[in-house]
Length: 397
Image (cartoon, rainbow, N blue to C red; front, top):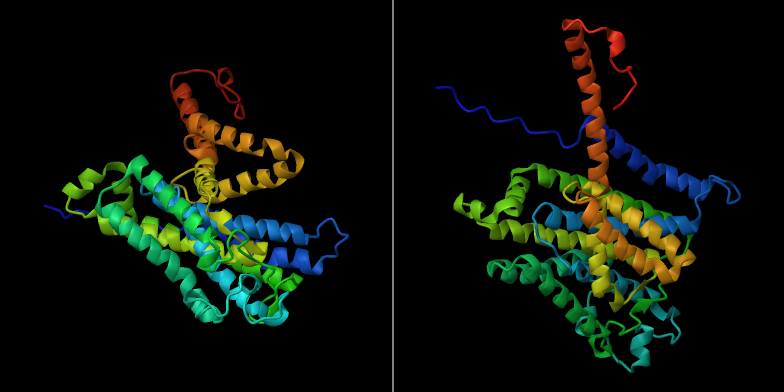
């Protein structure tokens, strides 16, 4: 009896995939900096500072959409609370940036301006390591990760799933938003953190620093994409997809879904935290509004519009939706929310696989037609049918 031959492991990316990846890498690391820093402002090829800030912000959103795809598209867990993890990472970076202001604030104090205004005498305990950039980097990963681990452990252990899990995540985010709105928590209350001056001692408003943040965000997005691709292609990823399709069968096969769901949940939360930390210095503000229910729902919309369980789709969806938002909120601000709702309904009804799914369907159909034409011609010749009676080479039904 011959042994079972296991299929060979698929490459991380196809040839075309690696080509697209390196094109994106060159665009982020070389093309955009040249167009912004070296091309004169009057040139049609110049990339304005506004465009740099806008694309950098959308790339942060794309990281969140990618994180959503890992848990929703590949694991079947719809979270409506990922805005919390995004905001936590943003607040960790915001605390560091507030400490970097030093005595350049309005009150010329070592304390942030809002603490002086509220008559605080010393920094609260949770600001202890906020003056260290290295500690801030650790907290950007640790805080969203720990919060996600604690919440996910109890939720998944209790086998909460479906719409109930979605509602609980949204309730968690709303509760955190109310907490951060309170002045006594030491997070700036309703106004949050703003008026940042420098990062690592370098002025944050310079063109060079903005481009550095832009490039760093792009590299992070591409890095997370490769990480996600590797995870999904591994045995771990195949178990996640099995949990999505039939969790009870996975349990009967001897796998405990809890560690798999908890691991991908924490990874997804950390990705959102990193995105929030990159977002804050580029936008220049962080407040509790980032934890609103609408923001978390938008993350799910980006993934749905682009196409779930594709990895590329959520990134595309984030650019499509936020690109339209940046235009509509200026041209037709009163219609933006109607457009967003109509877009989500249209995608749900007519594009269940998103934009990327639609493109794949078209490409697959074209390839099928092209592949069938030679077969039709060979069969016709065998049956004695004149070639002139067949459709022209370039014709399509």
